Length: 451
Ligand code: NDP
Image 1 (cartoon, rainbow, N blue to C red):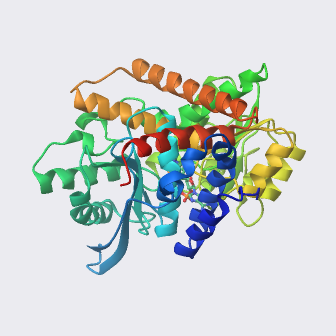
Image 2 (cartoon, helix red, strand yellow):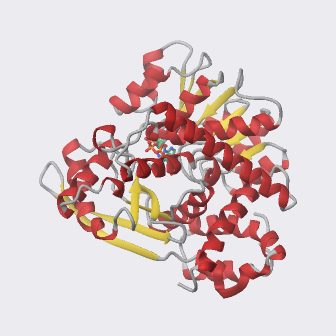
Image 3 (tube, protein in one colour):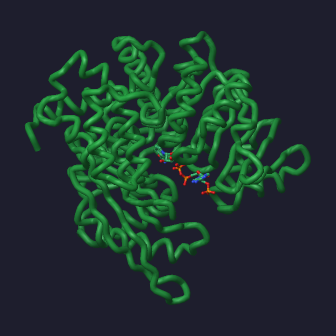
């Protein structure tokens, strides 16, 4: 890891002391503080009134019991979380994650990242995140519905279109959003469409929201490639994951003329040198909800499945890598392999998928590197567009919405690039994203007083 400026070191020490046993949260805070040395050197007033300490402390954290009854009649207990991190710029906004690995430290790292990401979009949204250690894998529709209803029975009292607006994340797609919104509506007796995003079109969703995170990351990487006079045309691409973000990354990369040769899930990865067949992948993952090995089984000769214990998707040579599964999925060793195989750009679709060691390897090798808090901001930006449509009782076309998304991603790219340049680190998108996001939140917080 790089060093934190000595003025900021006590802040980091205090964060680790007060949030012990939360390594992902420490990692996310460390990465932002690493970038802020240059800011406080230029603008020391950001050290006043414990501003940075306050940014590192969530405004509110809710942890609650989620009891539900499984199909065999047995009572199951999960834990629900909502971390309302920062509302200086607008209502808390960020997705819900359902995965057995979820704990308060993971939700805090995601909420912290979300605060700066949302600021980068330039839209009036604060940062929050939530979820549960519930594992949706292998559950029936009825079990998913009862779980979502039980979770919302507690969560609804903390939400509101001007208070806190959740959306999807790992394990939470259109089906789960529908069940959560249904229960919210029933409990409050209000049709408050703007209280949750990622809704289906039938009840107030936005066109292009499903596609937005993957499309947005692809737009960001395209903009980075263009700074070097190139683009996706003819490039070999590897995308990890095969969920929402991965699928729509693959779709847009293919539309831009790139060839995606590998993707994965937690069980392993498939290599299809002819280019991933997206219709088949969607059928297997979205409709049949099967494992990625099924893709190789159906495609047959020439397509390989390699299980997770035998290798990493990052062993597959490519020009562009787009990690789109989960945090810390791309290690320093993986980064070394990618660099050896001459990767030229990395765009993080997932949140914090590259370890600090991996980021260092990419930066040392001069690889174009787009951090998740900038590159995957298209999802939340389109969620904010969904809120705009709900507020005005309007519904935009796909083209209109995608045009807005493309402009927002271009703007985030240019803001990160210009900020990196301004602070003496041209081409360092990590620094650019952290500083630009921080300054927007910090300036608003200073105007609002010590709260
Ligand atoms: P999905 O649940 O749709 O898909 C997640 C994918 O990642 C699945 O293929 C899953 O495989 C894989 N995965 C999850 N955990 C692991 C693990 N421990 N090891 C290997 N693979 C894993 O989630 P999303 O596509 O929505 O989210 C992916 C990432 O993008 C997350 O980091 C999320 O925070 C981030 N993100 C999502 C946004 C959105 O709009 N959805 C917005 C911004 C960021 P398996 O099925 O085997 O678990």
